[in-house]
Image (tube, rainbow, N blue to C red; front, side, top):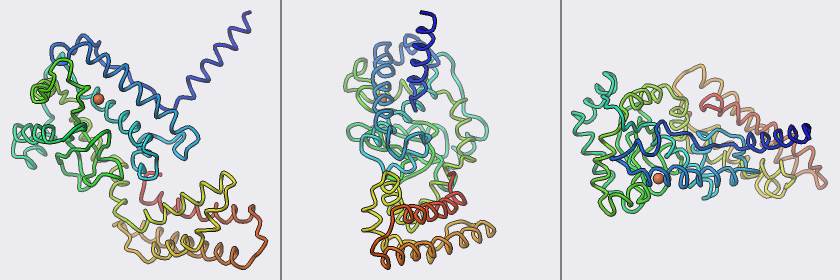
Length: 338
Ligand SMILES: [Fe+2]
């Protein structure tokens, strides 16, 4: 009996640890957000809506190329993911940030550093408040309003629809969010009904500027910002798409994509080699150029091998493709947080 309990406990632990993403705890009880956010809304929003994003995300990433990848990696490459992953990864990231920046119990002010940056960009804190308010009110339907640190390291107000966010490579105004306001009706409808305006004022009055200020400092040195910048390298993205499609299929013993697209892979590797490298540091640029040279040669070899051999073995193709994949990741590692 004792052993059965131990085995059962271990099995439960195994199932629990297999969950890639988990629902974060709130810093306060649901009731403590009153009167700014009513208890019922908090409970449903956190324990039902957010939990559903987490559950669906775990299900969707299982067996996909995003399995065991950090959430930032999923968001940065979400153009290669299914809509289910896109919506639920966004839902999980956005709500986690939202809970972190709310404090109904204490009042706070932006740090000196953040306030200086707000004043440089918006003039004063009240102007930022007005901009955020406009972003919330002008977002048609469901979505989010954001204060982000953009690719240039500057503050910017933006908004996205549904559960998208500015880290995603499908959005146009990109950066790392340090403040996000949920304007889905599920965030306010029970208390405020259709009065989104009242809800925004309530949220603004419980922002935790201590947390937001820390997020500002963290964002400035976050490797995610480097990744967002390197997305300005369209040739890298184009190669990545073909690489991802052919390599991951081959890993699952499906060699049709690489038979069909090996010439395209070679052409994209050459376009990449001859493109402008958006990395400033000379030492890194030289290393990237070296890896790109190797990558282009490897794609020629693969293309020649497939073209010249009527009876090519999948094992040899996999070996060559793995080498190409490794060279590609050398490049990514030099300009992204791979
Ligand atoms: Fe929400």
